Structures are given as structure tokens and as C-alpha cells.
Length: 132
Image 1 (cartoon, rainbow, N blue to C red):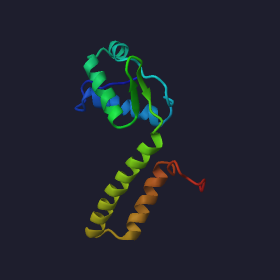
Image 2: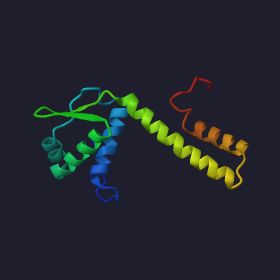
Image 3: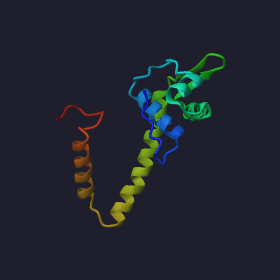
Image 4: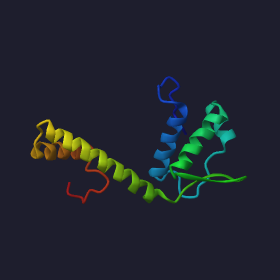
């Protein structure tokens, strides 16, 4: 289920958080689906249960999952709110980067061409209006 890189500089709990986010965002894990228990996942991955617990707490604080005492952790329904929040951050970061590129001498036309190249390289993105 998870490929963890024990030699990576990224902490194991962060790797777990990222893997769960990918599964939830890509709807491999559905709304209200139960996550594996901390104990079971720790045994499967042969890592400390505290690491799993830390990853679950992080996912819960970010709104990806919710916990029910005595029952376990489940996938949250608030996916669209999470995407909206994330998109706002990306837009803010993008504005800063575009401003810096313009300041450094890049033209608006060069930026548009660059964005088009990126869009082509990723297959038009998720919101493509089938113009391919």
C-alpha cells in the first residue's frame, strides 16, 4: 500500500501524510472509508505506532480525515474545501513568482508561452476543455 523511503531526508510521518493525501485526492480512498488502525499499519510497515499516530494527527489537522473515539479514523468529506484552500495558496505563490519573473525581465508573452509549455507537458491539466 505504501512505499516508504527510509533513506529519504523527509520524515516517515510526512511520507505517510503525502501517500494518504494522494490516495484521498485521487479518490482511491472514498469519503467515510476507514483508515487502517494505527497498530495494524505499524505492523504492516514495521514502523513505530507513534509515527502512524503523528501522521494521522497531521491529516486530521489538515482536514483530510476525522477520528471517532473507539472506532478509528475515516476519510473526510471536505475534499473540495481543502482543494479551494490549497488553490488559493498556489495562486498567491504564483503571483509572487510571476511578479519576480517580470521584475527580472521576463515578458508577459514569455510567461504565457512557458505556461503553455507546462500545460502541454502535463497533458492539459484536469480542467481541460478537450481542446487537444
